[in-house]
Length: 413
Ligand SMILES: Cc1cc2nc3c(=O)[nH]c(=O)nc-3n(C[C@H](O)[C@H](O)[C@H](O)COP(=O)(O)OP(=O)(O)OC[C@H]3O[C@@H](n4cnc5c(N)ncnc54)[C@H](O)[C@@H]3O)c2cc1C
Image (tube, rainbow, N blue to C red; front, top):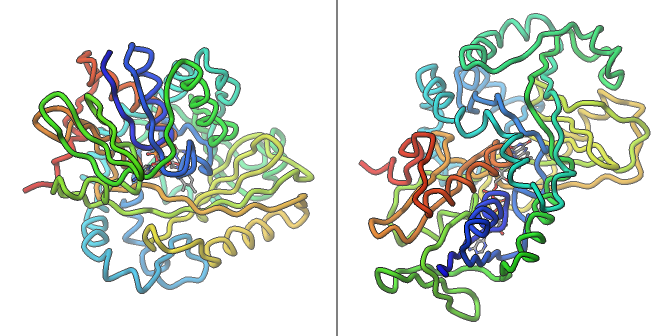
């Protein structure tokens, strides 16, 4: 039986491991901290089937002065980190045009459009099915003018056949009074879903993987190398392991582990935050993206999770107060009567490449090392399917999308 080592136990790694195990491989997952301890723990839980607009888009350029200067900006920069990430930032901003947005939409749609079905298939028989639900994902616009300014975005979704319904804010309040008087226009995106505790979902999937004979090692991987044409070596803290193939699914941390392969990898952490309101005195019915504020309100079991924002400050900078304060102050302004038992604060690292597309596929000519990371704001959405694609690549099954769109060497000249 062939042995595959999967490095990283986020949604991408765990999905990969389960699909490989189902195909009869012996699979070992290695994670430096354990399952769902990276971005997969604290995201907003949205299975965002129609999120085909990347962060770098024409409106980013228009709003850049606001993002750089306003104390209300949902985008944060750590000034001392800017020189280090300057090349990334320039290249990232250069993608803020319609041509790039269309290209992104075409390439991302096949990874996300059937997200709920993909999660259902992944979770079937694992005990994690209970976390998945079909749910509209709503976008709230404070004014009609704000909605009109975003019309191009909705036209693009229409062009890609992604269904949505535009409703009046007052009408919507009858259905979900939580959002009463906040929005003039609400767009309800159809065929979406929610994971009702993304961290526990991934942990439950991982528990199932272990119960089926999989192995989990908690250790940092320090090095990977090829031993011969059949075997690769993975060096962990106190040991070396041999496998037939390895899959690197280490999210925002992937640059370091792959440095020696000299692949050009313009990868940054798009840091994001959440504040959870545990046992709140009232709940929303549906998740809502507050379009002007760039965060999402998601009802989850026993709490409301408010998650989003973007911060550029690298992997090493600890959790910072200004983004958290922004989230908390906005929620206080919008919902002055919201009370809760406890507030929980969290920082996560979204893995983002300059073109906002993941890296997916073999890294080497010998087909021993595969990579699967870089899903930025959509890693939960695309994670289940990504694992299945990686497993299909290893088995040699037909892949029903153009895998070269995500090739790891696409930034090489
Ligand atoms: C605030 C916020 C809100 C979000 N909301 C959503 C949302 O609603 N919907 C959505 O689809 N996505 C969302 N995302 C994005 C999503 O969470 C990520 O894209 C996704 O979790 C990435 O999964 P991953 O498996 O690639 O990486 P991770 O979950 O980060 O897992 C990588 C793992 O690799 C391990 N690792 C790293 N280096 C090593 C090493 N050297 N050795 C061993 N292990 C290592 C880490 O410990 C970690 O567990 C959000 C993200 C944030 C921050």
